Structure formats: structure tokens, C-alpha cells
Length: 285
Image 1: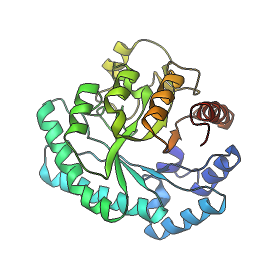
Image 2 (image 1 turned 90 degrees about the horizontal axis):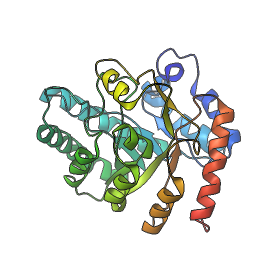
Image 3 (image 1 turned 30 degrees about the horizontal axis):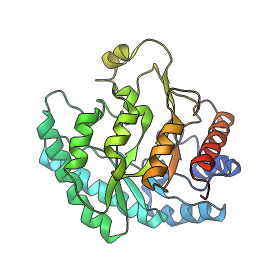
């Protein structure tokens, strides 16, 4: 993230080259890549990815819709619409939305209302471009001060239920449920009919407890230092149960791999693990 989004020490072309030998079908894009600031680059990156036999199905971005100032929210809506346009140009079908930051002064009802109104303001624009907005049960954007407003299951489900549109769904991340103090299987069962994409991950704490994490997660930019993305299949998530529920629901969409913090070899092992599980639970896929 730092290399691609902050200091420019890695170029997108290098990142594409890293992913090519993994044998994956697509690359989830991030709206904050420095080179994406120039719209002229968008079709060229699509061409580069497709020339390597992959597509760009999903765009990961982080709108902050819970700010108390209406002008700020309007600016976030405008940014989200630009990200929808980016998704469309890249050939993608799914563009992430979030609720926003969990500011201390924000009540749950007000936060749900602000986030739902802002997402709904973006949905006609997304629908016109064939893009589905996906709400993730997120932890915290890398560059945010406060955690996700809709991090906890009850709030997340309340927000999901507040939005009824064919171009809106859930991006399910089981590891984030653990960080919220929730059961990821229970969360999945509650939102199962709305799940249209998934983040496969296996998080763990380097040290300390979730209570220690709670004390650190507000007021500092990005992820807490004690938090780590682990190798998929080596953490707490029960992927057989997760994939059994998804396949039983008829889910056959994109599963995006969140791993590789410790290098490309780790990421390759996560790819192999997920391919094995996908073959087991979707034998005809």
C-alpha cells in the first residue's frame, strides 16, 4: 500500500508482473494507486491485465459517508461516482463502498442514515454503468483515523437492510468479523442472500488481545501495529463451513485474496489453499 499509494516506489506494472505467475483469474484494484490519478491511464492498465489473461473485476475504495458536514459527504459521493466510472473503464463489475469512520460523537441511527443516504445517492450512477456497489464488513481503511462505523455485526446488518437495490450487495470478509468481536459464521448466515463478493483472509494478532487492539484502533492512522494479515488456511476461519454456506446459497462470484504481506511465496500458498477449497465446494466451477 505504501509503495503503490504513498511513495511510488512500486509501479502498477511491477505489481501486475508479480501477480501473473500465481495463476489467478483477476486482480482486485485499489482506487488509491498513485498512477490512477490520471484517468488516461485507466484503459492502459486494463489492457495490461487482460493481455496477461486476467481481468479487473473489483475496485476497492473507501468513501467516508459518516462525516457530519453535508458538503464533505457530497464530496465523498462525487469521489465514489468517479470510482464507479473507474470500475467501469477497467472492465469491472463491483465497486466497494464503506459506511465511513466511527467518529466518537456519532450515534448509530444517525450514522446508518448518513451512510445509507450517501450510498443510495450513488446507486443510479452505478446502475447506469452496470456496476454493483458492495458494502464490506470492514475494519479500517489504511489511511483512516477511526475504525469503520459499521464494523459490528448489528450495525452492519442494520445498514444492509436499509438499502434495497439490485445493484447493491455485500462483500463478506470473515476475518473482519473476528476483529469486531463477532462470529463470522453467524454474520454470514445473516447476510447470506446479499453476499455478491468475498474477501478471503486469515487475520491474527501479533501480540496481545482484542481488548488491546480496541485501545489502539481509534485516533491513529491505519491499522494497529499488532494486527497482521496471515496466510489463508492458517488462521481462525473455517473455510469449509464458509464455502459450504456460500455454495449452498448459489454464490459463484469473485473471491478476492487478501494476503502476501510476508511475500509472494506466502500469497502463492494462499492461492493454492483457496483453489483446493473452491474445487471441493464448487466442483463444476
